[in-house]
Amino acid sequence: MQTLETSLKATQGFVSRLDGVPGVELPINAEDARWQLALRIAASGSLGRSGLLSDFLLYIVGRCIRGRTEEITEQRIGVIVFGRAEDYDPNDDNIVRSYARKLRKRIEEYFATEGREETLRLEVPRGGYTPIFSDVAPPSPRIDDGAFSEETEAQESETTKSVAPEKLEIVSGLVPGVPHKADGRFRISPGMIVALLVGLLLGVGIMLLKHSRLMESRREALSHILWGQLFSRDHDTFIVPSDDGLVIMQRLIERPVPLTEYMNGSYRTSVKTDTEPDAKEILKLGGRRFTSVVDLGLAVHLAQLREVVPERMMVRYAHDLRIYDLRAGNVILIGSDEANPWIELFRPQLHFRFRFDPDPDKPSGFVNLYPRPGEATLYSTKGQEEQTYGIIAYLPNLTKTGHVLIVAGLNAAGTEAAATFLLDPASMMSTLQRARTTDGTLQPFELLVGAGNVATNASTPTVVLERIGLPSGR
Image (cartoon, rainbow, N blue to C red; front, side):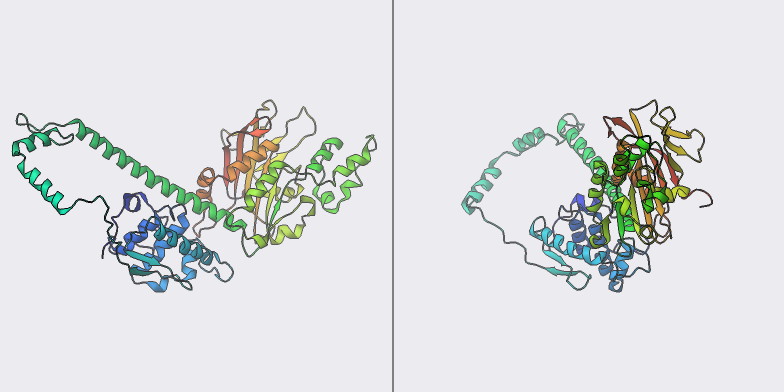
C-alpha cells in the first residue's frame, strides 16, 4: 500500500494538545500508515488552523488503531477533547456533534486539495465517530507530450558512456557541496557550508513551529474553558453595557445613585435638584438609554464567540436587568460602579474596588484593598491623565450556580483596555493557567489592567496586579 511521504510539518512541527494526557497514548506503532495519514490531515491547511479539530481527529484515530473503539463515544470525546466534566450530559451539550460535522467537512476538503494524491483514505461516517480507512488506486502517471522517446534515451546513454572517467571525476569535483580530494585532505566547499546553514535554519524553524503550535493550542483551550463557562445551554447569559445617561446625571447632581434607588426607579423622581435650573431635564437623563461605543464593541465581539449559544444569549440594558438574572444566569457587566450599579452587589468579592469622588481635588480610581509589598493602595489617573486602568473580574453569581464577568474602567479608555486584554487569548493565557483547577474549570480571578490613554483611546494594555481566588473569608 503506497502512501505519501510523511512531511516534516506533520511529524515534527505538529503537536497535539492531548500529548501526555493520561489515557490518550499514541498508537503502539507510530509509523502506522493510518496514524501518519491522520497526522498529515491534522497538520494540513484544511484542518491545522483548529487545535480542537486536530485533537478530535487524533483521538478517534488513536483509539481506533489501538483497538479501543469502545472509548470512541460522544461522552468520552467531550471529556477528553473538549474538557467537559466527567458527568456532563451530551444531550444538553452538543459540542461534539457540532465539531464532528466540521471535522467531516474539513477531511473532505483535505482529500480534494492537499491530499488528492493520497492512496489511503479516512472517513468518519455520519451517525458515529469511529474512523474508517480504505485504499484507493494511485493516480495514473501522466505522460507529457514532450517526453523522451526510447531512441533519445538510448542516444543519451551512449553519450554518457563515451565520456572519459577522468572527465567525470573533474566535473564532479566542481559541483558545489561535493568534497574533492586535492592533496590527500577533504576540503569543505562553499556549497557544503550553505547546506549546513540551510539545515540549521530548518531545524530552528521546525522547533519554533512546534512551540508556536503548542502555545496556540493551549491558548485556544484555555479561552474555550472561560467562554464555555460563561456561555452554556444550562443558563441564560446576559451582556449588560453601561448606563451612560446615569453617569451624566450623577455628575450633574454631584452624588452617586445607590443600587436600591436604581432598581426601583426612585432616583428619577426623588433626587433633590431644587437648586438646579434644569432639574426636570437632569432627571430625564437617568431614564435615557445612552451607552458607550466601547461597551457595544465588546458586546459585538462577545456575540461572535464560537462558544455562544444564540438562543441563550441576550443583550440587556442595565436598567432592564433584574436581580433574578444575577441569581439564575451568567452575566457580563460592562462599565464601572458609576455606570453599572449592579456591580455593587459583587463589591465584597472584589480585591480592586472603584471609588468615585465628585470633588475634583480628590482622586478617584481603583482601590487595592489588600496591597502586597511594593503595590500601591490606589490606582488613579489624577496627575497622570495619559494613563488609565480597568479591571477584569471573574466571579460566581449570587447563588453560585453560574458566573459573572465584570469588565470595567475608570473611563471609556480604561474599559477599552480591559476589553482588549480580555479578548486576546495570548494575554489571558498566564492568568487562566493559574486559575485553572484540577477538574478543568476556572476559579475566580481578578486583574487590574493598565494602558496609556491617547485621546480617550487605550494603547497596548498590560497586567498591573493579579489575584487568583476570592478575598479571604469569601
